[in-house]
Length: 228
Image (cartoon, rainbow, N blue to C red; front, side):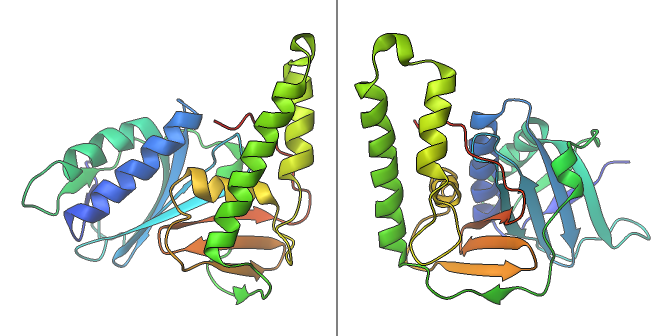
């Protein structure tokens, strides 16, 4: 049976397509978990370079409904979903629809999502412009330190070591690692002036109007990435 999502307007489909394309940039075989209830679609992905969970929502034109089911929860190929959403975003003059691809075996992260409720604002987060400047400075530091390495030392293990040192630092005044802010910037979330840091149990969430990144405070792995 074909399951079809109806977007509220063309911009919703276009923004979602851009998010999916960024995920695939970091992982050609990326999977995403889709959850739709009422008039909201939530898309979860995990760009491997940042080790955070990325969350993008889209408004639907009408409450999701498929026969007797009133909610959708499925893990699919990000590439296949992008193809369908991309076609929808190119439909001139219409809000567009997208077909939900066949389910795939979900990666381990897809079974451990942050809670829907219980989030509380955490004080101390710098302003959006300061967070963007912090990310830009960290990227510049990474590149400068890599350039200082002798050619024979520019191996993956050494790059990972430098990356872990820089990106595991906390954003001043918070427990949020800089890599989470870098992920938000790279995924197109860190725009405008609205930025909140939230917590719920062991989870931290950096939220903007364009999307969120979330990670667990306990047992969070170190970053191993070469910024581009």
